[in-house]
Length: 94
Image (cartoon, rainbow, N blue to C red):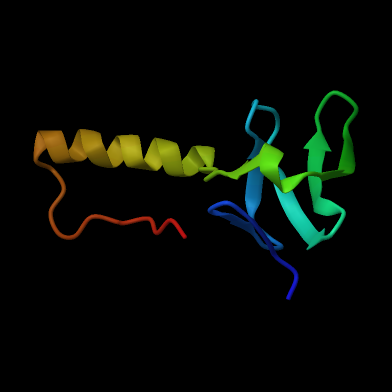
């Protein structure tokens, strides 16, 4: 299996991670003895970048789509005004 565990952090391909010291959101491509292979989009250079980073330097993050943020704000406004009836949409964080 292609995953690694450092302390309580386990990384698997497809996870979204970030350096603990901040930086861009990166996607885990694979994990091996060398470290965590990540891929991200470099906006400054307009290209995909890859690197191998030690797992201890990474943490999993949740990235929300901007449209989802706006939709959630609209739902909250509607709830406050009493205009929305029925069930609220719920987002599942894995």
